[in-house]
Length: 318
Image (tube, rainbow, N blue to C red):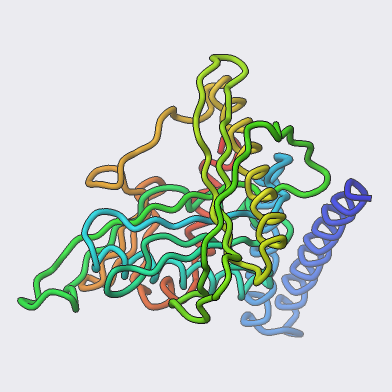
């Protein structure tokens, strides 16, 4: 059924392009006879162009994992309150983007900052191709602004990292060794420190992953505070673990094909994928060189042009 649904999606997209191009041809013929205005031709051209670009964009999301939901984690970089505030601003930006796309979102982990913002937070995004789009956001995001937290009103630079992995569903088989799992529990609170539980419903999953090729071990730690029940949090933590293990396998495949650069970047100068310069009203992606002056729109979730530029340039290899 999943394959049939995907094929129907391709056919529907193709039919829309075919219909729009036929309407454009008719409008072009009619404008020469004075039946329609040039404005109507321009409108038909814009519609056809958008549908063609959307179809081309859809072709960039042809990998198996691109069709899945996503798990998006944001970590504040060094810099204290300013970086933690920046991390919370990014979190809101992605929430607004998801709302606009009609994706279902769940905050699965949230740690308040010391005075403002967040230290870390995780957003679970459910919906077709959520990972395919959001994978473009993987990396370090840099903010430059006059800080409201600086008494001298100085211009400051802050960093936050965004990590995106596919959200596995029942169609993806991932092996988890039960012997490598251990659990902690703790009292959880909602976003913003609200509704502190009197019982330990929050869970912390520890998993020792052993690389089958190298034998190297690494610990994966996942915290989940979404549900008011410990059982619900355990179930979702297991799903998030499978998502991380699936991403590890995907990374190994990509590295073997020399399609991605190895290693992780530090949250510091020179490693950022995008800069948000508030005073100059400029947001620029350093991978594609796409930029816009609509800072407010971007922070309100208008990311489509950045995502599209990334996928059109790197979609075939990302």
